[in-house]
Amino acid sequence: MYKVLLVDDERIIVEGISLTVDWQAYSTELIGTARNGIEALSFIETHMPDIVISDIKMPGMNGLQLVEKVYEQYPHIAFILLSGFSEFDYARTAMQFGVKHYLLKPCNENAITQALTEVIEELEKHHSQETFMQNIQKELSKVLPHAKEQFLKELVTNKTYGQREWDDYGRLFRLSLENGNVQLLLFQIEGEYEFEHLFAVKNIAQDVLGNEVVLLSTTIGKHVLLLIKATEEAEPLFRKLQQIKQTFTSYYKLDTTVAVSGSGQIVEARKMYRETLECLNYQFYLGEGSIITKKDIEQEDDGSPKPFIYDEEPLCMHVKSGDWDFVKAELGHYFSLIAESRMDTYLSKSYVIPLYISIVRQSNPERINDYLQKIASFDQLSTLRSIEQFVTENAERICMDNYQSHTKKHSFIIHKMIEVIEEQIANPELSLNWVASEILYMNADYLGKLFKKETGEKFSNYVVRLRMERAIEEIEKTGDVKVFELAEKLGFGDNPQYFSQVFKKYTGFTPSEYMRSP
Image (cartoon, rainbow, N blue to C red; front, side):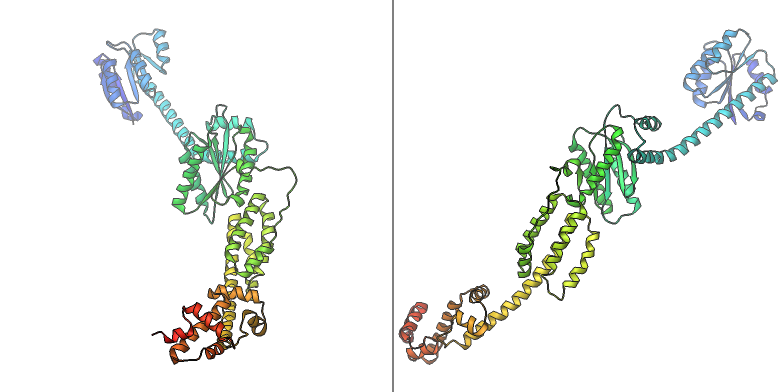
């Protein structure tokens, strides 16, 4: 039902129209009357009618003044004006404010209902148009984000897109650069992720950077791409990128790598996009979760490829010996050289895999095949850091295995040497050279170093100490023993004087003095 207000200073006119018109028949309802424009304006502000039927000639505020006031605030309200005058000026003034229906008094029921019918048709038509536009806008609001995303994809991948396309679509999307520069941000999620994670990164980035900075955003494959207004200072942007990464990680426990292009005109968008993709390639060296710019990947280049040369023999020798401290430091040095070379991913792997194989060859023969089968893992390693970790972990296992093996072997040799000393304690020929050449058939220098490393004593000192301890035991056990007998029994042969000198140096007493001491 359309609400109608009737305004006229003549009561008979008001009552006549009120009672004459069958309001319900025309889907209308008379909700009130007013005697002049002032009362009518107050009523309109409170009850908001759809149609006002008003006389023109009224005291205080006439009909034309009422139309003007209402049109300023409520242009959707329709008017039907009544007047006893036929001057054209009244009609012309009313038409300036959208009034199309102007009736001369006295007017009959048919004239009023005809005008009322036409006004209602116009209101319904206007309402229908408004509803149509609202539906169109609603549908556009659904489509527009997708259109923006598709436009950004075309802008960075389609060779035919340039300034003209930006101008056209910029007007459509209400985007303005004001002759400013732009940048591209390319996000890559690390590890296994769901498609919804890409939208999460996009939404977080838009929230952190703000709509005044982010012009367009989209997803391309496994990446999130943002077109932003270029900033003069890099540090504030990098702080916000760190905030984006931290927020995403806190919610989804996944890290992101970000490539940042240089700034430039919008027509350079394709070049910037290729730049961000190139930056992501250097994630191999800089590691997952980095923020990578063109400066990070620039390097001095004289145009000629530089060969990568590395002598792996010292490294392999220390792997074989189980010297993990040396191997760990050397692997760190090796991968630093690889990183500095800035070779592409596949070429870098072509150097690392042979080194890994050389390291594996130093392992226990029974385990070599197990380590070689792990070479397939190189395909899944996407960064130099992950490759270094893989090689280092396996090298450490091999080193530790070799160290344990050598330790067992060394322990057996030392145990055998101590057994020989115990058995040959009375032999004047007992010496390191004698044991090496006559018993173990090994290098005397190597045995001497091995013996000292395991026992903490030189071989000769160990033998002398053991002989003196045995001498003390013998003296304390018998109480009275001949010095020459002790000398002969403990490997000093027929030189008791030398035995006494050694004994005194060891105990502070001669054997005779030690026997007499309480």
